[in-house]
Length: 204
Image 1 (tube, rainbow, N blue to C red):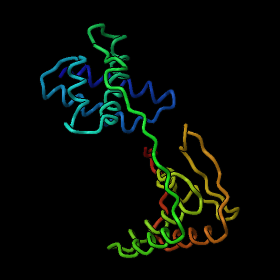
Image 2: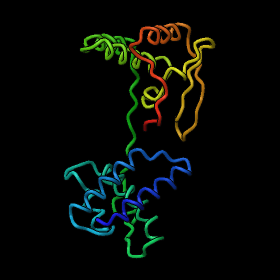
Image 3: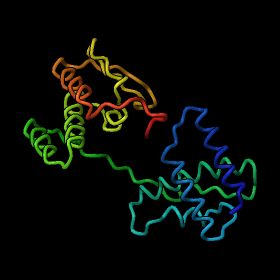
């Protein structure tokens, strides 16, 4: 594998991130794709090579294959502006199948059962983390990823607010918390079993 492809990937990620994209998962997948090209002694991106890699593992979900191919497609389209020999997979080569998740509303009994189950975890940190996560999801309705990305600096206990960063479409918002929720979060932070400071980079 020519080092130029690795360099081009770095330039591609820098360019896309300058436009506001986070690209945590795409970076991981594209690195794996370049590893695959090296292992198969392929020096450039071809439709055949992209399709073979995208359909790994065999027997996987079609939508996952389509996503993997779409990640390569974006990188290949960028490369083709620099090297006309690079092939760009067609958008309909592995079309995604529309699939809506069936919503499930958790009852009070369901939430209580989850909190009880969390108490059986092996360490105090795990018990506190999972219990807090379940409770926060239940009372605010935020997404799991948003809750996992939250840290101590996002909690304003004085005004009872939680700042949700990196939400849908990269937007931030403030959530008003019930006093009992504020008290629970304040207790977790005071105990030292949870609430970390901002990481150097957001997670996807």
